[in-house]
Length: 459
Ligand SMILES: Cc1cc2nc3c(=O)[nH]c(=O)nc-3n(C[C@H](O)[C@H](O)[C@H](O)COP(=O)(O)OP(=O)(O)OC[C@H]3O[C@@H](n4cnc5c(N)ncnc54)[C@H](O)[C@@H]3O)c2cc1C
Image (cartoon, rainbow, N blue to C red; front, top):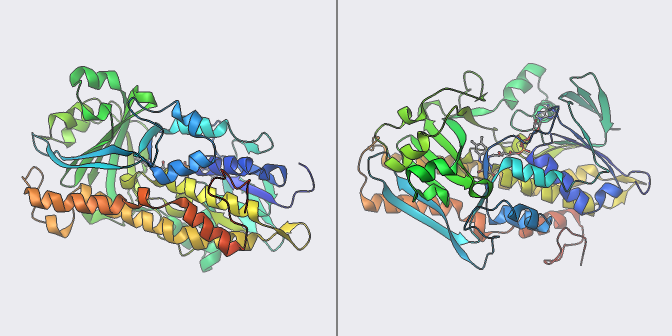
């Protein structure tokens, strides 16, 4: 540390969002000026997980953080580093709850989407975190107390710590969100637990990762060997796409009970290993669907849950980032992408913040500017993801007459294609640069030039 730290920043959660924030702060040289600690509940950063898809907005950030080259090593065959100059066929939609697939849409857009194994993304992020940033493993936050002077953190292992600014990057079941909501709404401990509890969307998934060679043996032309495919049907759909430089396929089989939307899921929301026969859930679906579901051996099971929309993503000394602020269904492949966006904006605001009153940074101003930009956008993406899931599963009122396996007229499928495209268009025809500009403006901070990677060059 070059001088007395102006700020002690604690990041709770070393997942996608927490580590991206640490990388962004490193890239901006902030780690030399402030004290940054990451507290992660896991004893080891095991880099677990399955596939994540990234869209041009998310890729823009990874490029700005100088991670493009490292991630390129994990691109799948036929994929290139996304460039907005090139139209790329990125997603294929089929109606597949019948023996022959019916084409719905081939979604092409500038730059295209790229898919990775979550573990590969975490490995790349970890390699770019400054050694000045301390990662404390085995530290599960249980509670915190915010005062005018600072925040006191308490961990399950009995340890305590203090910080000036607390970033809750602790995922969908965030302890930081619970404490934040308790203070915001003056809730009792029990009421805060209820208020912070995620809501079930009515959808459950089985997830697994399989060797691509298995699929290639059964069907050498299977589309999931090359790009994401969504096999859609009434109240169910199956998504499959290549990861790990094409060596594996990530498969997710969704099935929904629309009547259960916004209820509490009964039972554990994640079961790491099951013995379910996934194909039995999709009887009479197409051969391409069956080729995927037949190979989902010992899949994990997840209840798809969301965070109730928050009115703001932080206040005072507390700020929420990633799933803790806006956990969403995976139907737009954007949970990680939104965590990148949060981290990128927050890091810029911390980096741009001029010290006020001696050596302290105006934390409340950083958090208010962050929330003003990120809350409307994050909440919009949650809602758009929920709606997109209904499109994939023919759940809109216009498909009330459709049952599993029914033939749907081409003009109705064309209208569906239009709706699917409309809901995803923002991922390539908007830019994070505009949001960053707005956030810095709110802070009264200098703007970052277009060519700048991480705000090291300023106008
Ligand atoms: C089926 C499925 C498919 C998905 N597909 C995609 C996709 O294609 N594209 C995409 O962008 N996103 C996808 N996502 C979403 C994505 O995985 C998440 O949105 C993303 O990981 C959120 O990052 P995060 O850092 O907020 O949370 P996480 O990555 O969950 O990290 C939270 C971290 O906090 C730690 N932690 C939790 N509680 C505590 C505590 N009390 N104290 C200390 N540490 C704690 C955890 O151990 C973890 O390391 C998908 C999600 C699901 C369920």
